[in-house]
Length: 339
Image (cartoon, rainbow, N blue to C red; front, side):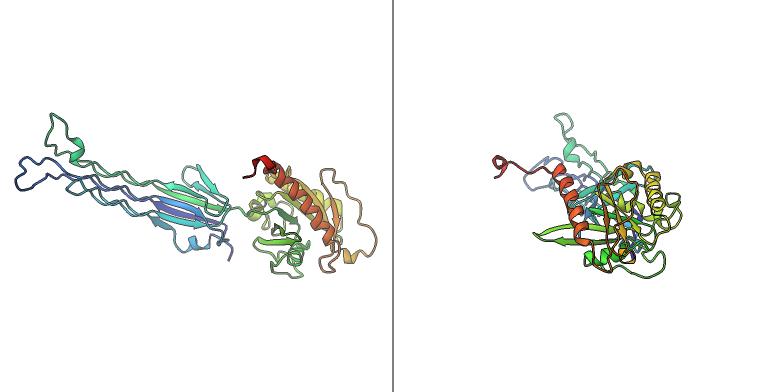
């Protein structure tokens, strides 16, 4: 079951209280105060775990609490700090405070960690309050309470290519052919009910990730169909591939509608590099693909996933653009920079 949103309550540990204690030892008169400080409460952390792909676990448990700190003890012994609580989530998860709407952060790479609730500070024992004029203090501090908040966890899949198209445009079939992913495929609309990821292997140990998004229909940005629920998953993709089936009644209208839905959802998303992929070309015969007005597209490809035709050109075109985008983000180091 794919779950891409969860609400959980978290509470960091309360700090331990300081101790009031006086040293009592034979032959040591007026031993003085020796009350130790309390330990700090445990934090609540969110950490990216690449072994996870869904937030399903947080539908079974929605409250997480870190351990409280131990109280201080005599002989200037500080209490033990409370253990932290770690919430593992898939990479690409965004964390917000549900009550205030504040963005607390996002974890994108395996091991990325952020503190979402800070544990309370331990209180001071009476030994802390000793001065030259106040030799036997009985003051102490209680431990501070840990931060408690309600979190909204939202997963946005990370992929190089996002497949965008109407229901039955051939997205799942294409993904199953070019990767080891096995999405559900059938001859009726809305076969794909949740996003699927596939890793595409190329020669020379080159790989990239493709995301198959459920079909987008007109009005998806307003919540119609499944589009609004899953459009968030193409926000992190580098490139959008608009799939237009060759058996569509109007190729230009279908492309324009998909572009309009993307732009209505997010102007930033609409500015991403994109290409057009005519699918089901085995129904078209040997004729060249039809003309389509798409001045912003970096390429127009024609494929038949079922017939395994046109795939090499498509993957090569995708890789060239992905490689260029990766190089722009991480330019190659000069020989003098290499260790």
